[in-house]
Length: 324
Image (cartoon, rainbow, N blue to C red; front, side):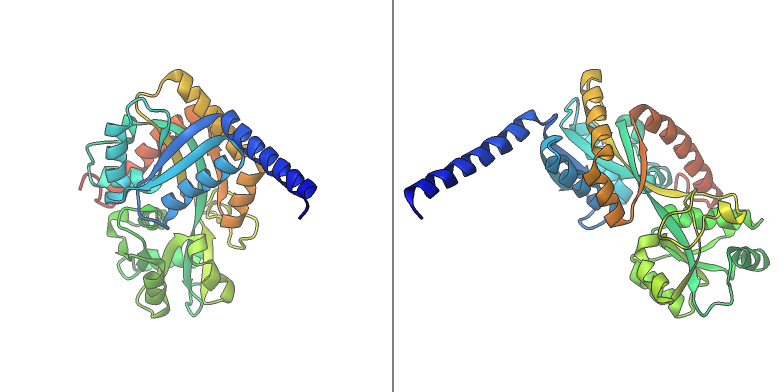
């Protein structure tokens, strides 16, 4: 390489570095840390790392570190954040419907009113499925089965008191039966629940649609309905409401700010997340992950959270899990 080419190369490199530094300096947010109150690879961890990816790539934040603090349905991470973040606008927490349920069922001393709702971000549809060999062909068939034999209608799903359990209770109630009698078996993973269904140990299963999408598309499982309020592009199964069953439940995820964050910092954070969710990169990521855009800004998210907490408390009380 001659001297002229080297000088050109050095100049381009310097320009790129300068532009990169300019983007970092112009970032609306500084160096953030986000607590994902669960282990690596789960839904909250994935949400935190999605925020990390999009905000840094778009220059909304200078850098983001994700910290995993698992335990007790997210309540361990919540307590650590609520007691340690103070007024620091650079510390955030991811949470969702499972955390609301864990707070209620565990009677956790630290609740979500100890932190500030910042934005509701994503919503996953839950799928109600049966094995392909099942004689249950429709959601009405399943409701009829519950009505005729609530104890014999064994459900497979995730953790007790979680979104899957809540939906099983709501469907039992929709069938006219006592939701406290729901026969629900909690499995630690989707693979175990799938094996139980295919092995004939349970009648039906509930999980996020993406968990069993492969088996639904291969024909091993039959998706009777989704719990999302509206049809979702790419999913053949229709919402419960569209099939005449007045039930909806969304596995939502959101982001929370520190408890004493100032109004000025809160406004800055709200504007940054509003920009993020409207970016092409965020919308592309949602499509790639199979997540629904369920965005609500801070004030609307706070109102939703109040109503959602009351609703979930009612569901968990009906199955005898509130305050246990």
